[in-house]
Image (cartoon, rainbow, N blue to C red; front, side, top):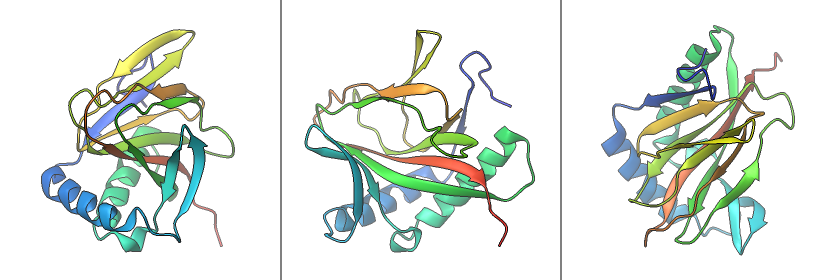
Length: 174
């Protein structure tokens, strides 16, 4: 199921990363301040979750399709998956507090990295009080169990870090 069995996570790389990520970043910057976006999880004057519809950024369908394909491999399933996603824009000095994603019927959680300046924070997985820091790299997707306690370490760079958080579940039949 997972490439790293001890901490139960897998890492995948999107091969078209340079063109996809730059286009995603530029389109995100144009939309991020729009009044009509849903924002949740306000901590330290920063919304951790910024929701943008898939059709508003031209590269999102490719990123989401890639993520779903990787999630299917990780879950070893051919069933249709749905994905909920949000942008996480972390300015210098930001952290993301410890949390899990097992609120509903999630099967898998993940993060796809768009812009990762040096020293801008890493994903930290916590299992049995042991922490495993996973280096964040642009173009990588990290998938992990939704009940895994995790956080993001402080962005110590001078630039924003941008990623897309995700939760996967089985698609509901209509």
